[in-house]
Length: 412
Picture 1 (cartoon, helix red, strand yellow):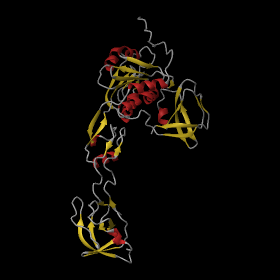
Picture 2 (cartoon, one colour):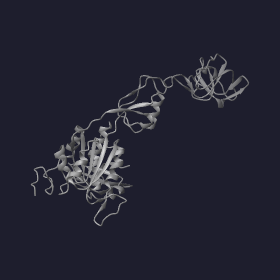
Picture 3 (cartoon, one colour):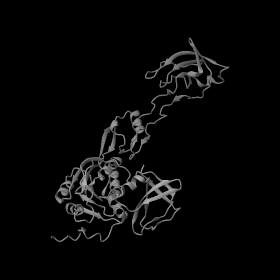
Picture 4 (cartoon, helix red, strand yellow):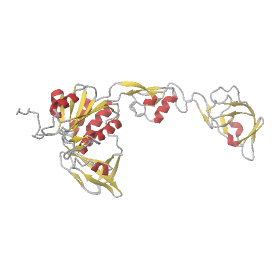
């Protein structure tokens, strides 16, 4: 039997573990936004804006009516009412999409449609429901102030203003703003390409027959939507046995920016991924002082960032959230911080922890406050479906008694 190398922890355990802060610092140093690309608006929803968008035009570009009605000189409507209708001579009509050649003089009005340019001489619009027209005369029963029911030049967007800031995740209304500026494409950060590598002789893919001592593989079902949520482009999912050559081949394909290895990251005899990462590139971190997810590792092979995620599903989810998800978000131009909503609420029961270790505690919201569900149980995936979110117990804490206000990160 060959002698284990000095850094080989298989069947020996971790002599020491890195802090969560050290691992996060490595992720921060190893990742930065990648190249950018211009994409059509119909492909830009959810993408991250790469650079400020500065308006090169006014929206609207002309004074326009915000109502169907009559364009008038506002001062001439003073005193108008149901018992004191003010008559005006209708001298023309203003329609959307075409210039109005008529000028409004004293005592005159122009029939106008929503979106039509305001005729010269007019400075307000009286809505149609306050007008009674007969032949070329209209009686108006509503006084209006200057520019009432008028969309002014640049009222929506003024030329020269920054309308969208770099780093913004584009929403449907953002695309509408870009379209209103006449832009049909937008500069965004490229989505990092992500590969998932699932290892384990005991794993069977859902839908396939399962042997007596096999389990259905669940981690790829967790990781796929997380990668999409964080702006990654899933390039491939490889399923391999606990075989060094097969794992090495999948790690070195070189066609992705990030590889997420599910399973084989710990100290078992068949946990080949850490040693292979050290041989083929750099194993920067292996073993982290946290629960669950302590066997997590990370490093690089060439330009590809590799994360070794534990095979136990809760550990896999936790390690992804703390480290791999941060990397994917940063590579795609997003903030590295968690995308979860948070709230503060009191604990209903105590959380016990240990100094020197970060704990990821699944919790449930109740009318009385936050109920801890689980600290351990890395393989109990249902604890995350029963939970509404999680609480992070810092390494310097022994936990928290009932009634303590805690920060809760919500899964939804």
